Amino acid sequence: MAAQNGNSENNGEMVVTPWEVKGKVDYERLIREFGTQPLTPELLGKLETYTDKLHLQIERRIFFSHRDLDTVLNLYEQGKKFVLYTGRGPSGPVHIGHMVPWIFTRHLQEKFQTRLYFQITDDEKFIIDNNSTLAETRKWGYENALDLIALGFKPENTFIIYDVQDMDLLYDIALKVAKRITFSTARSTFGFQDSTNIGWVFWPAIQAVPCFIHKKLTGENVPALIPAAIDQDPYWRVTRDMAQKLGYYKPAQIHCRFLPGLGAGGKMSASMPETSIFTMDPPDVVKKKIWNAFTGGRGTAAEQRKLGADPSVCSIFQYYYYLFEQDSKALAERERRCRAGEMLCGECKRDIVEKLNKFLEEHRERREKAKDTIEEFHIKRK
Image (tube, rainbow, N blue to C red; front, side, top):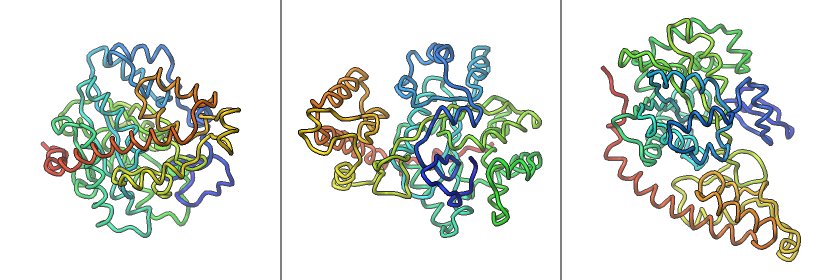
């Protein structure tokens, strides 16, 4: 399933790589093909003992798969803490889909009182996009960091890494990682080709570094837990293969689903802005995108009242499911009314426009304030 960005032939088939997600995503198939583990009731019960109650994204199985989450929790039970690691490839503005794993990451950080290392991969975006410049990727790195901070992260335990700016801090660990990953492994994992530039080939070693950097900064050797969408899993597979050879714990992961775009199928993508809601979209743009969105409705209002609609394929309902209906009973009632034909798509769209614009207005206020504190989040050195 590995393929370089922009080089796969989709033909309606599922494609899930670190650079490209297309087609209808079969998450059960991904668990089998990626070799991850489903989140079992027993494991979720153990997680709940440390978090008081399960986060909404866990309850609704938005996070559905893992590697070594059980190991991390067992070590935690024995007194061994862990750190969190996730990040953002700054190719453009942040949309709602990007924020799904960040919101869950903040929950874990608060419940376990642990550090987050957040990697801004401005180097990767420059390397893989022939049309980008370093100035552009660094600019978007700054803008994306503001969106992260606006979600409520605190500077005392949130460490933002800007790869280009902080490469002197990363490079020695990246070299140690790179020395232990063969080109054969990288090619089979990521689909590198003869035309692949050598920066792209080396870059997975850089993405591995935040898994291990806590020891360099503090002297403490602890595992890292990575909340992220499952398309990033190939990076951690190769990292896990060599972690213990360098004296580190294997990084653990917990994987989330993709927030669907507003079109008919596929994840929300910045490359299709008409199907994505960005944090800086003004109210009229949000309204236009929602009213043009694909739904599970019928051809006419009369037909829908008679036969009902299908929320399982509706992009609008997914917004309620992922983020914007915290009350599960209210969500179930909305679904019931939709299927029974008691609610038309226009009502759902009006409701989500109001919720989205309220959320984004408050987010942008916090984002503006974040400009005064953003330097406090830059990774602290010895």
